[in-house]
Length: 290
Length: 151
Image (cartoon, rainbow over all chains, first blue to last red; front, top):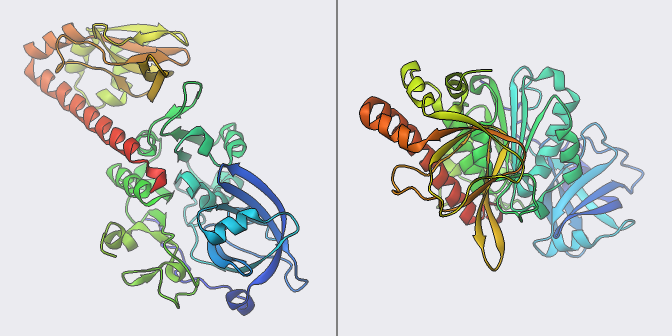
């Protein structure tokens, strides 16, 4: 049984990072899909040199005059001087973020949240299942696992997207797939005839992945429905609910558990999560009324 | 070369089947290899075979005269492709085409059906596996319909 992450409640060590957005400059911006962009940020203030974070954590990004949104950190935790965020343009603040150009300034608070149990999973098989934009929050965990590959048993990365055009980090996935020590499965729900990859839902791939359920830590991130059925499949295969970790990104507004917007039963997602062992949230995971 | 019985014993669909039943099923099988682009089956043809995919990848399509072949899914190694038992006189309702060199065991549906009639223990075991396969197919189809990534 994998232990829960040590830091069940995570807050930035620097009080300034908690309450006061620090200025960051957009260094580069890359279009990933039709509505999703990846931005590299660097500190714009001499007071901030690095922004250490752990896999699974998120920042609150502020577009001055527009608003603030929680966005998972999707970069490499060993490069704390470069913040990477992948953002889908869905609301006013995220659309404004996606319009930012290199040189523009934005505010960053954080990092917030609990972490993927990549250290606790050492010595076990690791299964990472991501759907759609859910690949962004788990990418730091993938970087960590690949950098410490010898510490794990089998490593399976399963990624599902709606269509080939919606695949995130396409070239990076190709590169990971080229390694001999990790199995990468990519599947899409719908595709034109020229698509050479796999087609079908991600849960079907989970059922066929190679791992020892009794010695497996599973990391699951994606839309609610995808996570629900993926968790079900993992449980069916015999992975314990303590060893399945999910990320619940639900209406987070303040990042500190003060505003109450992200409350799920007794939990505040921003303060107690967003990464949880499934055993801790299973009673709330499928509740429709909350 | 491994016997058909041995390769079936390693296939997830037949996992845990008794050696006696495996031998009966294997007696209905033959090894077939499809090159990329070759069809395993075509719509409206009589469905004489139940395919056990050993290696490769198969795309399942429905043909539209206006839009051409529409892919509904892929079938990979460790899966099966079959449309049998309930749909006499056994006609395929889709096309299935190898996307790369694919090796399969093709089970003769009529022979297998006859063996299941003769030995109801075998029939029940095979039908349980086939029913489970259908349940998974239904679940997958439903999830594909709801657009999980838009939720």
